[in-house]
Length: 148
Image (cartoon, rainbow, N blue to C red; front, side):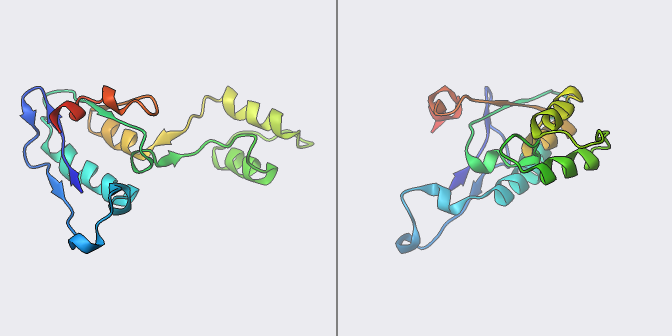
């Protein structure tokens, strides 16, 4: 597994991450060797620390699962009513009495403009950077594919 970041000037210094295993244990699919925790640690402690603080960077990433873990997951109709109510309470929103149906509870959340947030997006924002996510299944739009 090789992880790196590039810019129009070339590779971002000191950002290379290489994970190696015994060749017998390697898989053709690299997703077995990477997860959200490893990626987020590299993103925060390596990439963010090596980007120029004087320039606002835009980081282009795909929607691989380990790029896309959620810091805040807003409930949907797929959640049960108790989970939705707990989310409303956790975000200090009023719950009408009597408690309405799920669709009205979801509308309360939407009206307060609470949105899902990815962990790496929050890390980037905290460091003055922005994450641009590619549409699903469009990895060929990622500039790093031209480098590899």
